[in-house]
Length: 250
Length: 291
Ligand SMILES: Nc1ncnc2c1ncn2[C@@H]1O[C@H](COP(=O)(O)OP(=O)(O)OP(=O)(O)O)[C@@H](O)[C@H]1O
Ligand SMILES: [Mg+2]
Image 1 (spheres, chains in turn orange, blue):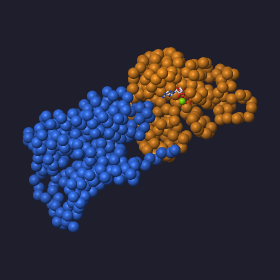
Image 2: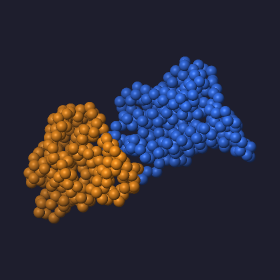
Image 3: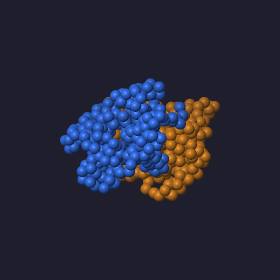
């Protein structure tokens, strides 16, 4: 469904992603794991059309995404949840969701129905429907950002660090929702630093280091890989939980 | 006493024109962060368009109005398409210079087309003036105030209740998120230009009967509108409206009570004062952001 072939991304003279190839098939949940600065967000921005200085090939359903503005990419069926949520702070929760469906041609009534569906998925959003989105808590904003992306009825949902800055419990809720979406047939790419939590719900994973894929494989294999364990999950799974990722991964 | 009332009425009337000019400027800034120093020229085109279509060709007023607004909006779109959009990495300062340059070009074109002589137009209707407590209100003043109210009100409804309006707001508050949500920024920019140049034209049309219309009338209007928008807080619809009214009223009181020579200076003194006291403008948006 999504295929990257030897993609390189440049910021001026800096090359942040250096020859990444990966593929995602329909219905899969694929994680892209990497430490700070590995190039995860860069890759994300490239797929969604924000970053235009890249070489290589990106195919979605067989068609190249080169040169398309972000709005066209969304209309083709890729929805993005950016790093740091990026909700429309002064607008209400309702309006944020409504705008998510901007590129879907549908009646006012159908839009209302979709919004109601999102509020079933995230009941907290229903309670806060008329509140300015900027006043929501971090976790609620993340749910809103995911809800807004889903309003575009995507075939592929790309999430950039949905767990960033959230308490383990909220992360769990959000990851459960992601798993649920997958079971409803949405293809998902999850860009994460929280390797434990991400791999626990993924089918496959890629490990990114300084702009290159250093490891790929099934989520289970990566989860058990000694290198990955050491670098991203925590030293010994038997030791008492020492950080967030361990807590959830376990 | 009659004098004071008279100053107030005149102030509201001229202030409404400033308000409409300011709204156009402010709404463009809100969506595109562009300060258009050629905005006053759109008002001038509005006035001159009416001079030609209504004054010269004797078209019915509503038709002349629609044609003028449509024509000026077309100029606005062409301006955006060929002068603003081609700039790939827009640096604010280069955009400012482009709009200043455009204003010079627009004035030059207007001088060639309409000549240098001022033209007067009759009022929209031949009703007599109204007298309230000794102060006189000419009907055109009422039309001007009504036009400003209708324009601001409809923009308010547009931004508040329509999907396109909300999308424009979204684009203004967070461009990146708007792109990722699938809102085409190019189309939003186009809407903003339409609204902006259209309201510029409306300002020009409504003052045409109460002023001497010349090719260079846009300069002062644009500057006053800019002051009004700054006073109200750039980007705020009702701020621009209130800023325009305030400016108009103070100007008329200043001209009446102090000297008519200081009329134009008042705008800029007021601007300095307000920028000093509250830099974001009187009605700067208080955002419900979390930090
Ligand atoms: N606008 C930019 N200009 C220059 N370099 C940049 C820019 N944005 C990112 N980079 C560089 O690209 C590299 C990858 O950054 P990126 O944001 O993709 O990392 P990341 O994997 O998402 O990290 P994190 O987990 O912290 O979000 C970094 O070395 C960063 O300094
Ligand atoms: Mg990142």
